[in-house]
Amino acid sequence: MVPEGYQKKELTMGGRRANLYSLVFIIPVLFVFYLPFLMIWGYNINLDSFRTILREHGFLFFGLLISGIFVHELIHGITWATYAEKGLSSISFGFSFRAFSPYCHCNEILKIAHYRKGTIMPGILTGILPSIAGLISGNLTILLLGLIFTMAAGSDFLFIWLIRKEAKGSLVLDHPDELGCYIYSPKQ
Image (cartoon, rainbow, N blue to C red; front, side):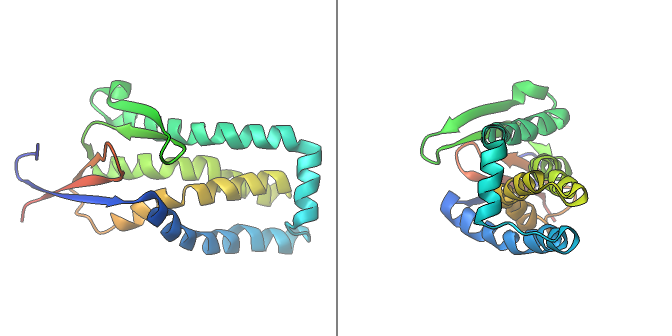
């Protein structure tokens, strides 16, 4: 149902295509975080350093990696629920066996600014902030986890990019079945 005075358009992308396009975000992420890490701390991520991380912190590393995937979706849900009229009852979580990935959907129309916040927040909290912490502290393990989660949020960053030109007064409904959303733009 299209809200009064709005026009609807669908913005979706297949998971493979989204993952391919989101690879574009890897280069700036590496440039912003890894290059300064290399210059400041003088060592880089190579096979030996990765083996050392796994030997010294392997269980913790993989535990954080697996739990971080679910935390990512939880952050989407909590952020969107903050803006949804019905709160958490508007949020649904699940697991897609087709994509072999957990997911979170907001089943309520949100203002575009609120949708953007919910979309980008996991990338900030699980990716960018740990990357900054790893860079500042010189902790390669934290930096690596931050880089992985920043890159894992690539499709979120992609959708933020795709809706960047939408009108400020637009509304958004998360797509229930596909990667994407419905945009409700005010009629001109």
